[in-house]
Image (cartoon, rainbow, N blue to C red; front, side, top):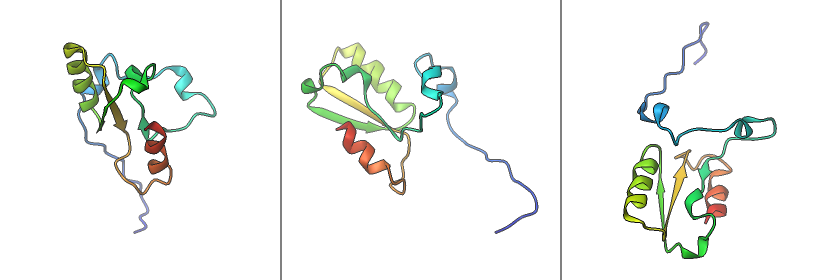
Length: 101
């Protein structure tokens, strides 16, 4: 449908991540030549991926809740992978999460 006026995009979501100390990006993440990453690997297990025997896929604020619980319990055999796009329509989506595994 074509309209003569523009409608604003409204994103409804939790505001918890706006103030969360771990939900930040560096300037290097936004430099020229970088792009949106639909799947984010778990930085906590990047050093020793052979210890992982369980992979959990989550979106949004659930990563930070699970990461906090994992630190509380001292568990290091679980990887928490963040899905930033929950639609398989993205051409790079499926290849991105295969690369993480």
